[in-house]
Length: 118
Length: 110
Image (cartoon, rainbow over all chains, first blue to last red; front, side, top):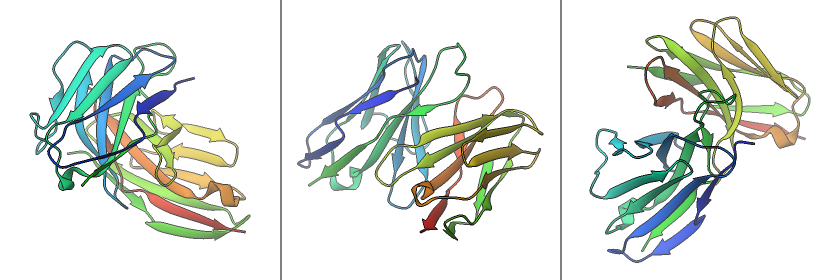
């Protein structure tokens, strides 16, 4: 149980284009989902917290107009990187926290999406 | 501000050589402490959640313990497949976000 998927797993795009990443909780409902960014050999950096049906809460220094987050249902959140540039190249990982039940407060992570902007 | 410090940064063990990873934390009221394992190029895989001092949890060769200031991840008789980066994270009461440490990279040599 507690499986989270991400799609795509890898994407290469040209500078200036937008890229959408999907995060789905496959076997549980998640009121809250999180988006992280991870640079090589570094730990996870929280970008934003999204609650189903509400606007996402962005961490300090994260541009909300550049990283659009939508959490339209209890099993799906999307991250859109708008007008991507090479400095946006990174490993993006989502996580989901189950809504009640026996799984508690634990966040379950997706497999990550490697974004490369040329 | 919540802080998580993990040590050592890297650890190299011979297969079968038991050891412990440390996670020191400061948090304004602990809601939960989490251990994850991360393989290169993959998302973190959940291992344990600990909620209160004195709590212990075990899974195969791994055992996690918790005090009011730190947590230990004990690895007994590790195997090469235990090689990974182990991440510790804390969540404060009343807050949704968790704060991650920078991890311990474990290498187990056959």
